[in-house]
Image (cartoon, rainbow, N blue to C red):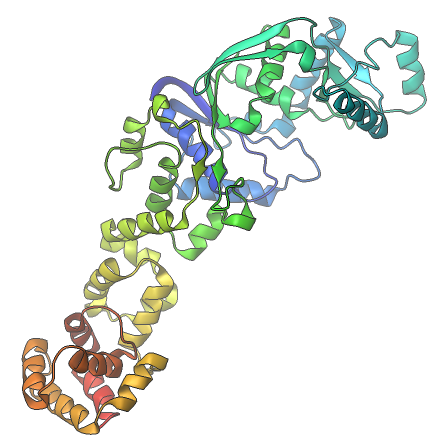
Length: 461
């Protein structure tokens, strides 16, 4: 952890997913002060319900922010409420000749990009409007044309910076071209307000996806032109799906809200994400403080990380095992909790902790153990049909003689039936639970109770 300020600055155009959450986590682990900023300048796509969901997701993950919307000055952290501030910086750039209005149409820009491609050059703006006179600009404005505002990139220079993860980076300004910093609807472009706000909010270090690498020289040029301090940037390798393409909904990515709905625990998600591109020495569940203590930039992989759902489930299993009774009880569904007798709560939670990873599994077994309705699955029915009725008569007699002593019950059943192994346990498990797999039968025997055990065995006699 460095003695500096990092930030997470999402655009609320949808629910945050695993890639967003990893970026937030790495910034939270790396900086002593963690800032949250809402970049909501896209009037068409940004929605308040996504902002609310973002807050809920971050708090669920325990990624609380030190500065952000819940502060005494919340407006400061919503870009949509900072238009006057951006306008002053735009006016300054225009006054100094470092920005100019651009009236080029979408079709003209597309044709220019294609011309560069045919020449084997990277597409960039050719500077069509860079030389317009004041009269030409006024004429176009009088015609009702609404221009974008472009930053005038200096010619023949190099933008050099030391990436926190990738080392020295160098970009030629002649390959960049003049770029848009304000849209035609007067809203600020990401490149501009993102850089300005980082400087004004004292952000010292930025960890973000490698898809932003090409944005960094542009933002450094903006900050230099405005005499504003620049943070140090580090660009994280992307997360890939199992098919080797960038992680998306199509190949496995899920929103944090969806994971929460499925019953994943915050500790499982955090420990999974922390290891996506950053190794830790021990394969154990770390607290957030331990993750921060062990986080080091030099350990970050420069190659993409692979999303493995089996690894996420691995951490979920460990997180459930490590959870205390209070956490597990709240984690269960309302319907599950309503089924469990108070005197059986602790025993059932021990069963959950050692056997299942998700609330729906616990609900299925709560219904098996604490309701009178039992529907054996296909495999259990097959075993039950193949078992002699006399076997169940012996089992019922043993259960009546040993209603609370499973081991005595089992010893008698082995003696009277003369069977052991699968031929003993499969019919017993099938009759008591309707399944051939599940928790230890001794625990099941205790939780079912004498009445329910005898009722289920007598059904097959």
